[in-house]
Image 1: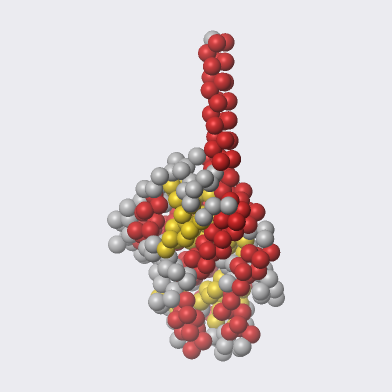
Image 2: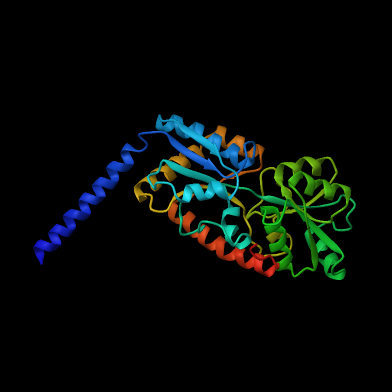
Length: 319
């Protein structure tokens, strides 16, 4: 028994040593970051900032490969789990199966979380001539006029839709969803008064709010954001239990060694502390939000379950 135990402990020590050595030698070749969005998107911009800094840190080439849509994500799911193929994506990843029944991957089982890179707060905006001066007043107004108010989004399953729909469900409001092709169109509809409510990206909310073209009522983040310090959170303004934070994060194929996941996570955290990176992210309304691999796995699992239920409640079924 003692002999077998000693052998077992020896093997465990050997595996631990091997795993540590693997992490120390990583990366020894080019690392590829797949972005399932087009070039020029916020996700793409984050990936290029990250790749530039990691390349310097690792003294290895780190390339960004744009593969928009489900094919890009699916390609990562089937890649070799060695740490040389990564993916930077948004929290839209968690509802892939809630909107597409033929999606060729499992958003939880086929991926290993590495780290959240950024949170992307949104601001609740209304037309400048809206009777509602606060979020509480807007909620009361809608409750008194069921079915007569609507909210815009950058499309079904977009983060702006999820934020608006979660708000609608938690406030128990009878509002109509009006999807648009993208965020600019959804915001323009508010400016024109064609729609009465929208959760918009921070930069456009700030600039149009300052210009008097929209009224900013609240932010959907856990705390006030630097760009809009006088704007309360949704929880402060009206719904104490409201919670929705969109994120961008880095994942790897399931089965990637934990030692490598941890090393990449730690190096991403180091990059996100750089003032230059913090400033670049602030320009597009993002906030650095590094996590451990275990923390990110928990977020992916939690959000997949939660947002799938939100979509079902909204009457949206996989097509």
